[in-house]
Structure formats: C-alpha cells, structure tokens
Amino acid sequence: MACSDSMVTMNGTQVSYIGHDCEDIPEFLGKKYGFLARRLDLSFNQLRSLAGLKAFTGLEELVVDNNLLGNDLQLPRLPTLHTLTLNKNQLTDIEALLEHLAEATPSLQYLSLLGNEACPNQLVSLDKDEDDYQRYRYFVLHKLPTLKFLDTRKVCKTEQQEAEARGAFMKVVKPMSSDMVAPGDPKSESSSTLYTPLPRGSRDGKNHKGLGRGGSKVTICYVYDALQPPITQLSSLTLISSIGPPPQSTSLRLTPYSTTMNCGPGMCVCV
Image (cartoon, rainbow, N blue to C red; front, side):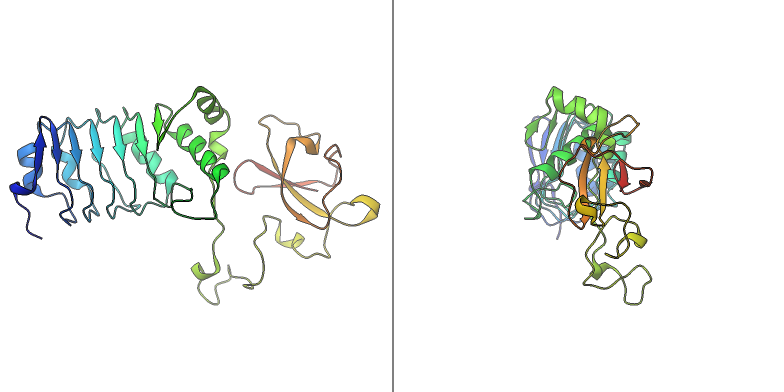
C-alpha cells in the first residue's frame, strides 16, 4: 500500500498513523515527524518491524496495538519512553521480551501486553485463570521493577514486594505439545502419556519411593514454596503431581530417601 503524508494525523506532539496495513514504519514518517513526536500511535497496521523508530529519539509514548510483531521484536534505545502498549500482537517469549525492554527502555513505567500469548489470560486462552495471570505479573515486575502500571492494573506495593522476593520463580512454562515434536524424535513419547514433572524412572506406577498411608506405595512431587532451606515439612511445599493417593496430612516429614531435581521454577522434591 502506498504511504503518504495525508495519512498522518498530528495534534501537537502526538502523531498517529493508524490502519494503513504497512509492514514497516514508513521512512518519511521518521524524517518529517521523528524529531518532534512525543507520542506515536501505529495501531492497526501489519507491522513486523519497528526499525524505523530510530528517528524518534525523544519518544515518550508508543502505541503499536493490533500488529504482527513477534519474538524478533527489536526496539532502538528509547531513553525517555515511559509508556508502551503492545496489545494484540504475536509475542510468545515473555522472558526475552522483558530483557530487551530493560535495556532499550530504561524509563518504562506503563506496559500493556494483553492479547499476546506471552500474557496468560482468558483473552488468549480459556485454560488460563487469574492465578496464571498473577504469576505473570510477578515475573514481569521482577524483570521490570520500575513499572507502575501493567496491562490494565496499577502495580501495588504488595505485588512489588512479592515480585522482588519470588518473581524470578514465577515464569509459567508450558510443556512441549505432541504436535511440536517431529515423528521419531527421541524427545517424543506416546501421545497418551500425560505430562508429569517426575523423573523418567518414576513415571511407571510400579516404581515408587516412599510409603503412603496403610503401606501403599506412592510417589509425590512437590515444588518448594519457601525461599530458605532446610526443607523440613510438606507444609512448606505445594503439590504439583501425584501417582497414587496423596498423604492425608501435610505434616509428614521428608524421609532420608527423598530426592531433589530441577523442575522449572523453584525446587522440586519427590518423596
């Protein structure tokens, strides 16, 4: 689609170039408006790159909702940018995005990522709930501690404290789905096998460590929910997987046969 100056709306230092199906920021936009624009709205295009932002050196607000921006997103350094909305794009890698924003936008205070897979809520997936979204907020605030608003909600003091204490462990990792593994790949297993964080040798119901009530064998996997060792009671752990009946009491002490392994956020303990 041909781009022209007549498609631009300007109000003071606010520049809008909305709904013109461009895949890149037009060169004329930066040449004519880059030095004076403080707010730039490029929503409802088909942008796959923001390389043209190099000319907007004094930008404070950037709106790029409803575009096609993906995990290869690269922003030039924008030291005065305090507001960024990336709603409804194609972002899936939250950690890489946040690390890039921490370097490129050091003054960022408002960020919105709604409608991207990287932001786990019911706008993108019905199997997400408020707990998933809250963990996402803690992780984002851990990576970008200067934020005052995230998505539609103001950052509160308790969120900041929780993000500082445990945000590093709050990244939600989805197990690889069967359709992402090529047939014959050694990583693939039977499609009927449910995902479990237990060690491979413990996935068989006949192979267990420990005893449950009444002498029944049971393998239980917990994630350590405290920050300081030692782990002394199951009450400090959160059940994430179980083969066989779970214990009736969370006051059972860990046995000398307990094993530990890395299983994503925090520490995983199997008994």
